[in-house]
Length: 182
Length: 271
Image 1 (spheres, rainbow over the protein chains, first blue to last red):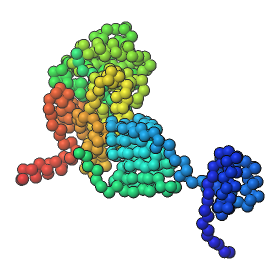
Image 2 (cartoon, rainbow over the protein chains, first blue to last red; image 1 turned 180 degrees about the vertical axis):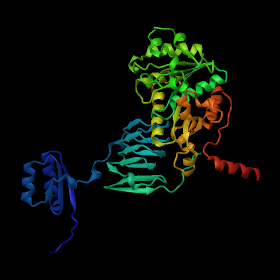
Image 3 (cartoon, rainbow over the protein chains, first blue to last red; image 1 turned 60 degrees about the horizontal axis):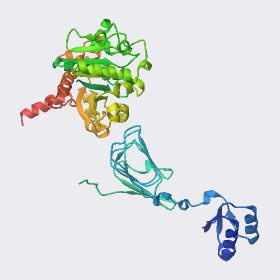
């Protein structure tokens, strides 16, 4: 048996309306010919037939979609929420924008944010962050979820971490400097 | 006007009732007219710990329903005339509690006594909520272990949200009493250290009570451990009572085992 490995370049397209799609396809047909198209949106039979006719490879398999496409919307609304009282067990904090937590997050407390999470004290509770990055120090009891990924076991308890979303990957970086408060 | 202390913990079995009984007795011994109220309706225990179980004629529900006056229901301790006790009902449950009734009762108690201790039930249900409703200050009893600390954290949050004082925008003063500290386990690092508990709960420490076998015997005999001059826990409760009175009493080292503290003392002599 012979095996070969290929790297395929993929073009992602979202079909918004029929006319603009055909206009686009006809214009860039010579280029798009060389790529695999990942289509989402309203992919009608007409579109599929047309692409087959032209010999353009395409798929509607959504698992091939890049995650970077869904850019978080919070960047527009820059409302920063500041938490400066101890987050006790049983407390739930939901934030649509960025959140700055200066105090401890105790065991049994939950903070959810669609923006970035910046925590400057130890976390014993649960943090769910859907932003671009988070800054966190957790204890062994904590649970950390970043953009749907459970990263609890990917960060140690000894220091602060910066976790960033870079394309489809997560960049987890230890923050080496000591944080000193004036 | 007296000061109302609610003794709370969240988790059961950490020593709320023992603490309420000993502190009320301790303050009575300091010459303060004190009353301890059992708020655990349907599961009263405080009467046994105080050794007053056979002297209860009326209980808290009779008073709240207006069937008898407060003075008729209060039981005075024979050993310590400054100490009074108001029993919980053993037959009714906490559904008889309501906002107005509790408010009137607490107000009446405040008029009569310098210190009012409310022994709250475990859990965070209506019994607990009524006990903290009109408290001026709370004493949070915690054992040095994770579940007790988390439950305490939860009840502190509820006090901050639901007590009448908090609703008026005032802060309810919260004090931490760490109970059942086992020196041996603390030395081995198997028990959570005081500093760590204070880090998590972030309230003021009022006392550290060591684990003491005398406490069980004291409860069974109905003589609070504070009356036992040989008991370490009793001594610790005495110090807490003094702190509540406003005296400045240093925190004793209850974490070092006896043998080691003896060596420490010896070493101190030769320094």
